[in-house]
Length: 212
Image (cartoon, rainbow, N blue to C red):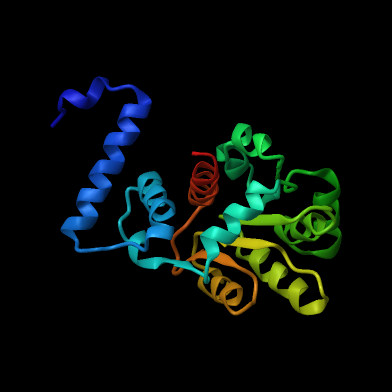
């Protein structure tokens, strides 16, 4: 059934949507921690899936740490061009940061083929060369998370922050568990669900929290 809200402007629709999400959470007797609420709600808004209220997992002070990194101009590296397109680059640029996706780079494709690994693996290695703090937003490739965790163990390098929300069935849950076993601050969605849209939604929620 269509109600009178069908003709609302986009910002009014979003406001109404978040009000509905809040009502639904109340009905389900779900109370989100204040620091995490807007991030989890934006993921629900993106996916229309209330299971995220139960599965979104945050390391200690994760939101405050991520916001401070963005406030100081940290870059974001993602594993898909879809997430790259979805992240609000205007807001990130205002803070002094950039968003990168190396998946389509010719040198990444050549190296991945030569070594018999995924482009996501090589992309994470290339991202390590960035001379700024980096938030990794992984929404598709568990191999990206696995390689990040390997690099953390191999030497003293580590990412500033990991958003680990790949979607799928092969090694997805295990890769997320690896992230949660590191000492890197993280936002992870436990289980099989996630995706590039979820990774972008988390990034945007953090950016909007910083700049609102």
